[in-house]
Length: 141
Image (cartoon, rainbow, N blue to C red; front, side, top):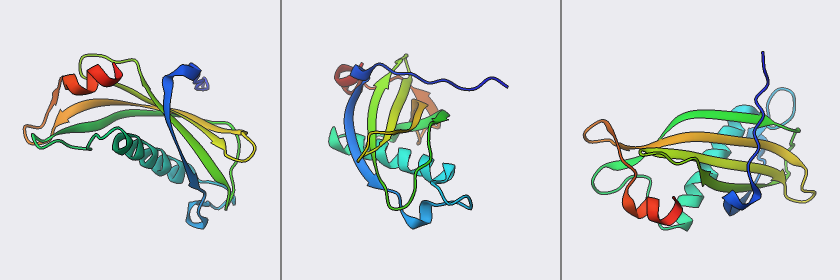
């Protein structure tokens, strides 16, 4: 099976946040579990949106829904390390694009993971995919 290889240009990242690896994030192999990393990516995305004054869902019922996820693990991380999450956006289309992430150890800069997940805008009231709102496209597109 072919390995996933993710690379992103440095200039795509426009936000960063830091989170500690919690004891509850550790798996049976005594390192950061993949399920915990995915939850941390979602938290980083939520902080990105708040930072730019965006809501998960607007008053009209339109919000972002994740369509796919790819993660490339680069090294282990352990409790209680502090991780740096860089977040960016790229590969826009009519309905959405990709959130991209670069995760490193805050102290050493050692790479931990690269990830991207596709998203589309979705109207939760009408249960349908909708075009990217102009306010979002003009800010990031």
